[in-house]
Length: 208
Image 1 (spheres, rainbow, N blue to C red):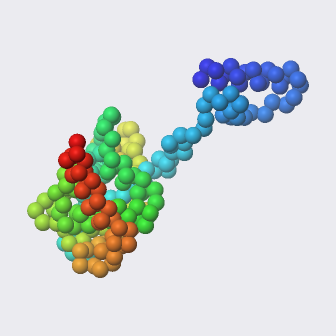
Image 2 (cartoon, rainbow, N blue to C red):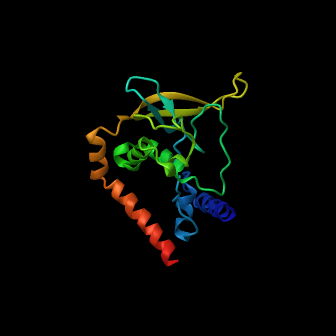
Image 3 (cartoon, helix red, strand yellow):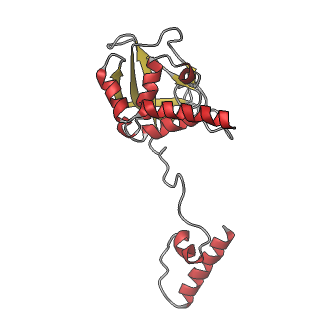
C-alpha cells in the first residue's frame, strides 16, 4: 500500500513538472509495470449490492400448499437468526447455495440432486441441515424459491436481522414420481458422479 502511494505521488509529480494534464487513473494502472500486484480477486465485484440472492428450499405433501422451509446451518434463511461466525470453517454446501442463487439450476445441476436426496430422506444430506421440517417422513414435493435478503435497519422496532423480497421461482415442485427428475439427473450424470465419489473415498480409506 505504501509503495503504491509513493508511486502514485511520483507519477503525479513527474506529470506536473512536465506540464502535462494529470488524469486520475487506478493504482493498478500506475503499478502494473512494476509487477507488484494485480487486479484479480475472487470477489472483485461484490454481489450483495441491492440485496443478497438466496435460494430457499421448501417441502410439502401436496402440490398446492402447506410449504415448509428447510433451514441450513449457516446461510441466511430464518429472518430472525443472526449471521453466524464460521471462520476458519468453510461451510461448503451453504457456500454453494449462494453461488447457485447467482445463476439457474441448469448451471447448478447438483442442487436438483440435493432435492432428490431430500425426497429420499437421505441421512447424510439431512445431517447438513439445521432444521428438516419433515423429520419422520420426507415430503412428496420439493420446490425452490429465490429471494433477495436485506439487513434490517437499526431502530426499526423489530428483532429480525433480515428482510426479504420474493423474486422468482428457482425450480418448480419436484417429486420422485416425475420421470423428468430422473431424466435430468441422468443427463447430467449426477447420481453416478456421487456414487463414484463415494467409492473413491472408500478406496482412499483402504489404501491409506
